[in-house]
Amino acid sequence: MRKYKINGGIPLSGAVDISGAKNAVVAILPAALLADEPCRIENIPIIKDVTTSLLLLESLGAQVTRIDDHTVEIDPTTVNTCSVDDELARNMRASYYFIGALLGKRGSARVPMPGGCWFGERPMDLHLKGFRALGAEVTPQEDGFIEVECDQLMGNSIYLDTVSVGATVNIMLAAVKAMGMTVIENAAKEPHIVDLANFLNTMGADIRGAGTDVIKIRGTQYLHSATYSIIPDQIEAGTYMAAAVATRGDVLIRNVIPKHLESISAKLVEMGAWVEEMDDAVRVRCNGPLQHCNIKTMPHPGFPTDMQPQIAVVLCTAEGVSHIAEGIWENRFRYTEELLRMGANIEVRGSTATITGVPQLKAASVMSMDLRAGAAMVIAGLAAEGTTEIGNIRYIERGYENIIEKLTRLGADITMIEVPDEE
Image 1 (cartoon, rainbow, N blue to C red):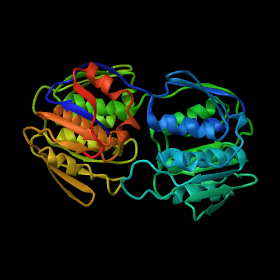
Image 2 (image 1 turned 60 degrees about the vertical axis):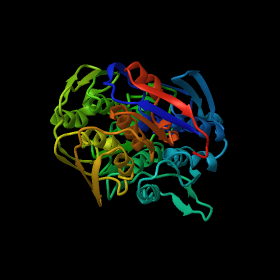
Image 3 (image 1 turned 90 degrees about the vertical axis):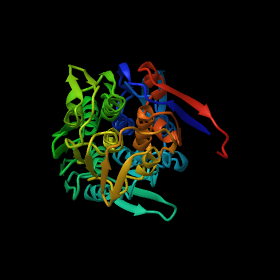
Image 4 (image 1 turned 180 degrees about the vertical axis):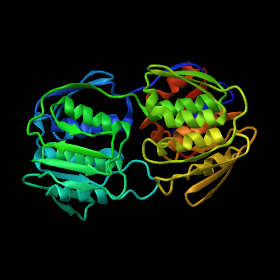
């Protein structure tokens, strides 16, 4: 079993380059199936969710060629099945995007219920509502698969009862080649929704309104080849911003889109950190006490739920009492039990965590409960006094490229260690 070992208490200093966005690439790779010619995708992060996505593409018959570590060519013209591999799909939540992509490409999809991190029920009702509105027949199977079929998808108006990134993406993928116009109302507005639309439009799709709450898609029968570069990862950037503040460091975070970070920057500034925005970078530093603040996670452009655990660690050593209200997932505070082991003062009631600042976090042996909770444990270990060990690091590797190397360049004392499984 592998763990991260962190000797904490060292302020981070230097520069770090942000990788391509995980949440964008896991939608864009399935979207490549819709092309009628090969396409090239650049700035792909080296993370396990990408590896799984590429294996899923190959299992469907697509030709996948690695040009270099961050560039891949995908030829979807050789796809020969609509059934997605069960074992691979259960390794990641975003495997459900293959439903919309295969439905749009071949009029049929057989995909298992997805896996990935668990922090509450995440039903697919809105996805299936969207497929049915486009004319598809949806049949849940007893073996845990979902089968979706339609001879010819037809455009329609679809209102999402709640804002859902996953449903917005899946409906977009299915509607790109449907006949006529599809209108998604109450659509998600996250940067990776815009990135997916830009990728599809580069191949000849007709998608307008991405980034607003109304997306209009005029069906296109043929999508040509394209070369496209994934946007920088908003959440990876935010994680390094939080780490800089938690360790009272000074870090230049490069290859970012500062506008995507505004909600994160605003809260760090409110706490007393200093944030300087540049064209494609932000500099974050903090060398004094932090002030308490209140945060509520919301759909974009609100504070992202994927940054909630990381910002909680920062608040653990802020003066006074802070409150975090989780507005997206009902069970995303499981990681707080691990922070309690490190001396944090946190009380969770329902969807709200109350954090009373302490002078210093203490090292402990902790576990990564999910991807972003794992990132939070890393930040806590960097800020804590003593040596912290973090287990279940496979979650962290799902979404952070070369995290040990990047943190080491910033001066952190972090290594990978092997321990007997019985520990």
